[in-house]
Length: 221
Image (cartoon, rainbow, N blue to C red; front, top):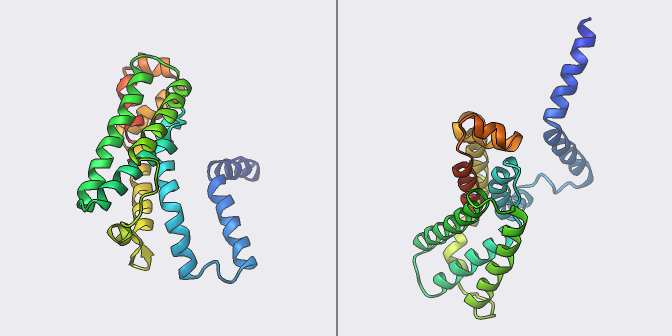
């Protein structure tokens, strides 16, 4: 009887952590296929490359959990990058510039969330229009040219801190914070509730519109 009850429990654990199990298998395979995979230089390279898409994935997690979609996140990121690059090239302070770009990113995301949550517009249509619009704004803002000559201002993100690049630590810390928010806070439970059944969440007193706006507002932050 104990063996029969243990099997479903093990299966439930495997289903719950199948992503981590698959990742562990990839690590094992990479270890045997390449002797350079677990070297410090390779991990620095991996974390530097994963920092940007990883942070975007963290923000998109909130939208996906609310049963939403966002097609504009790439164009949104491109516009913020153009803003940061332009300001840094003209001698602006790096920290102030990043905060300024994050403020714009939050405002744009909240606007999209307001259109979806308050006006009941379809997320696919809203974010598709935003994708084209933000891409066009970035194209005009950059004057149709590449922006370079500011690499030293952001080089601190690639400097090693406790054997890992700073960008990697940012990704790790944001991942932990996101897990705590989703698993231990009221906002996280509301996000799950909206994604599970929006009408039931609304009847339960969950502020659906406000939560959805907040989810879109933090998607690139």
